[in-house]
Length: 236
Image 1 (cartoon, rainbow, N blue to C red):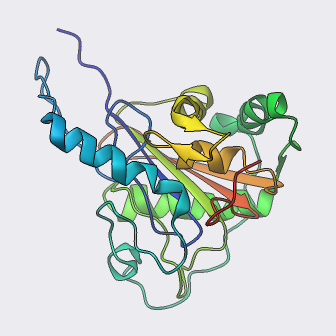
Image 2: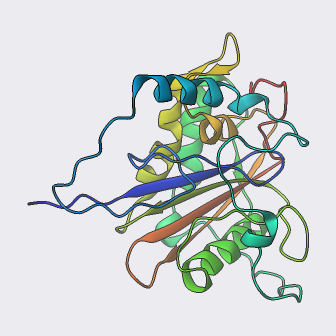
């Protein structure tokens, strides 16, 4: 029996510590291991309806409002080293990352919003965190802490898959959330924050990193400047 890879991703709102779970590939802050042939029972109707009500609030969270889904605290997410990490070297858009800017712009262009430009500096920043998560953190999905030596500077989307992946697979996992986003009302019927960060009109620069997990799979991190998903604002 064929075993399909597990896919999980994580987004970052303005307060830099957020995410959701969806083991089908849209979004997630948790990882799951499924045995071949195992099935997942759908939750009761009343739980699904409650979840939808929480998810619709995803786009209107502000700095002072904690995320409604379970998240690691900054202390849990922060690397154990107390000292400030060395400045990350620049990361060019090449190798496995080649084409990631074009993949983002393919989603933005139909909306008539400015194209993103690649930043080697932001790419290095993203690569530094991808390396930490993959090598030092057991490939567990966590956002950078909001402050401290490893503090977040940008918007952030994170993606993990249990097998080697491609730019298109990672970006498409985020952009697929467009199906749940209603621009006319700026509301979300599911999980939308990865997508809205991708199409945040005021964002101008992008940088990403990818690292192989020791046990297999890959960790992808993309950072965005300026960051998006601000309280009360539509992405475009």
